[in-house]
Length: 247
Image (tube, rainbow, N blue to C red; front, side, top):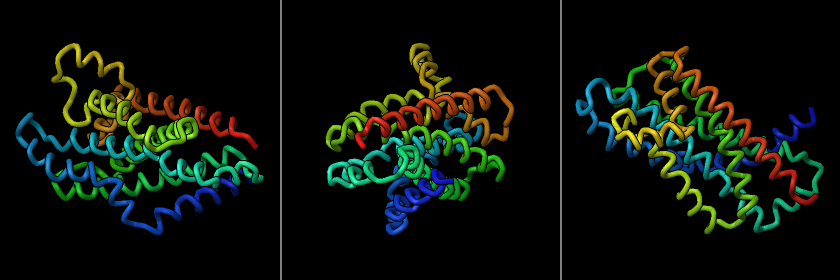
């Protein structure tokens, strides 16, 4: 019970920063929104079928990955200003310090995902409400793991000017190889082979299968397994990074 109470306290403390500034919600999903509004309509009729069915899940994936991966930026000023040092010596468990922040990030990402899907529906994207809920749940699971990993990296690097270039170097190829913009099936053989080595590819495929209301396919189950595995590994990494801090 104490862990739950402490996690709730950290969650409220962290969520207060973006709750008091709603503009941050819209800034966070402005990138995928611009792609959705300005790039999505160009795809209609270009590759056959309904391009919204594979493009919208890709934008949900982009929103989740970038939003969660940059979550660690909120930790760096607190490390620099001594806020975290005071928390290290407080009677608060390291797990609560991590979980509270991660849950706050997941709540923010989920809200942004709902807004993104609402815009997508207005533009012509069609799926069922249960499919959208399942897609948001899978995205939230991925976001939780990547958020924990981001805090682990922030504790290691501690400087924004080193953190940002490293994330950009890692995320850009991972996102392009996952097929968020275009299906990788149409890529050259060597590029498609590289995409198969990217775990995010399987999550994108799962999101597309779910929004197509295909819940028990190989793509969905594989993507769920990969997401769960990434979540466990990243959370363990984040907890170890928190535990290494001096009390």
